Length: 234
Image 1: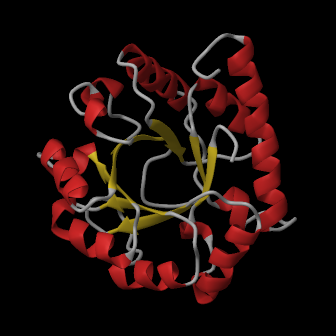
Image 2: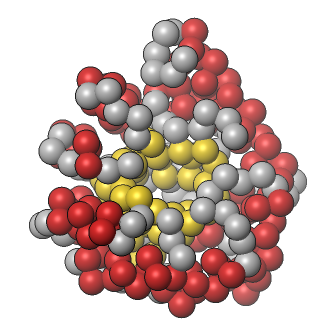
Image 3: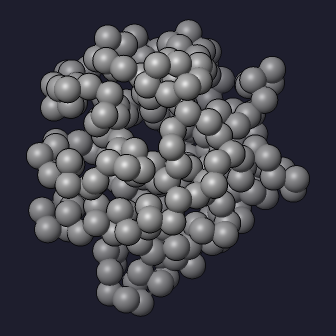
């Protein structure tokens, strides 16, 4: 595996052929699968619940990250863990008790992530970053696929990287929203270790495998840039 992870987002797949989309990502070289769970309250959209995650679990060996874009995510952590998710990511904005949610995830023996929206400052992570395995910087407003990348996410990724480096942490820094070959190098150079890509993978005319390969090539260029600058990875 490379020094960064490619996690196709099934939000952009054709739900009528979901198993095929999952298998295409696995065969095409994806590292994880990113599953966006939406409740129509925290975001203006509805997607799927634990039953669909369990069905996906049956057709792939890839790790599953469930990204909970829902209010009070604590209510469903156990259900998604039982469905087969290895990683559970909650939004800072969706619960007044982020640390408690992280504790619950760890009690379920799963890896914990905390996501922040575009208008949420990185500083809110100061008191939870040492307790999680992943932070997720949203580079679009959550709720829909196919949105345009918000450039200031690059600065936020760099700030997350610096925050982790000051503490000697080796956690993953994930970016989600509008990611494609045109900006993969930039976000990896800034500090992203996990690239979530939906439309760039499932909407690519050349197919899923070719799209993942193109993303990986672009990301490797960003990794080389970071290494030349003496940045965050050896």
